[in-house]
Image 1 (spheres, one colour):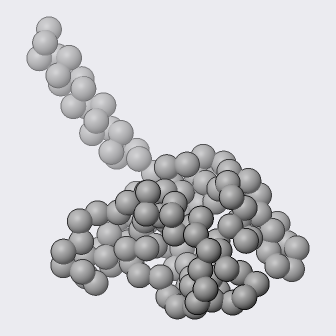
Image 2 (cartoon, rainbow, N blue to C red):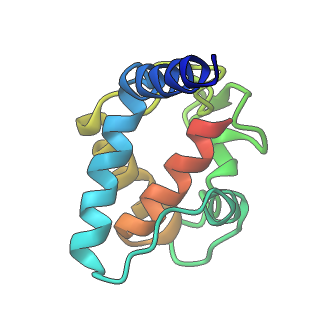
Length: 136
């Protein structure tokens, strides 16, 4: 009996991994970038991702000092561009299409990091923010 419970648990864990979703592929790609950029890479931090997202920065454009300028203080909410266009929620729980397409992930991190930070985000920063938003 005990062995069958253990086997069932392992089967569920394996199935859960296989069915985890397209966000896992994006995180794996970001992880590969982070490892290539820093051989000492130890993993992503949702806490650091939240801190970066919520912080006010001085290096970017004056009208976008923070991610929250357009995306609101809650990733569950719909944001608004500077031109007034709606931005779907960033949290995967509110918008399951987020972080499913690596090309889109790179495009939007490229634009938004430069706008807010005045530079490209590092692979670590992208992975930290993505990890936090995927968990929301």
